[in-house]
Length: 453
Image (tube, rainbow, N blue to C red; front, side, top):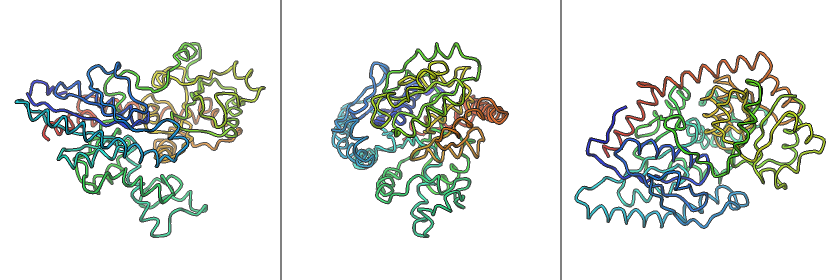
């Protein structure tokens, strides 16, 4: 890869990260990569809620933005209210910080350009950049498919095709093949309007460019659609977690004991269950999950976040008869080092909420998946896994179906075929990341583009 450090050009990058785990992680990974090029200084502007650990990133400057929100807000208030609140509260502090940087640059003989890179949930950054005459680049941490799917919803509303009738939910949306009406992100008007603002940034301050944590071959049709309809270059630089080694960015403490447990299991014998950092599940669903795992008679590693099952502190919802059964076949932890778990030879399947980071992490390790999506792009990602990439099974959370799906994944011939598909994709990803590959070329183009601004 070209080294730009000796070119003499310098740029001050201000990265605005969202406080959500699945958004903070790729932003810190992107910052680590760009800093390694030797021509960028990195400032991470972040809300005080879920702030990153500066000690893990000693080369970055960190700028907290007072937000007056807390973890209870994201659970108790609506997600949209949460997003609006922290955007409103962070904006004046971010603007003041940027004005300070601009004034400092005026006094320097060797001036550096200032470029804003912001997460798509932090839409206030685009309007501040526009007001101050600074270029802004948007990092979209969802799958590329989310944006065409989301932007078509008003048209479907006008034509009376959305929300879809129950009889039509399984039908493919003709303009969005291979996605079905049931895969579309939202069916709530107020949510759509706010998210349209988030998704498209503000009308008066379109981004100079967009960065997607994806790969060209994985989302070819969605990326073609985006390039046909939206201005500005598109950089596909994923998967970021494979680009450059970074310290753990987890907000939760990872239980490393699960690795030593995995070391004692047979190859490809364990199903790893984790529904991400945000999902909350009711007792009935959690109990069906538990019985399905128990009845499958397969080994499992189950991540249950404290407080993630409604009404319970941790695993008190488990029926007494299951606890003893679980000890023979499984391990339950509060949080796990997911990338290490998925790379472990003992893991034969990944039961996931299909958030984009988790999807990429599973795909990169060639691990077939059970898909239990909840919101946003997760239904689209589950459709990719099951229908397009053919390395996943969509599940309904009912104990009999779960038992069958786990056996299909770990034991049956179907699971072997899915593993073969997953490993084919894994090899293509390695090519994209190697010298001359699509992601590697896109990274080089991104660095050159920023330095030209």
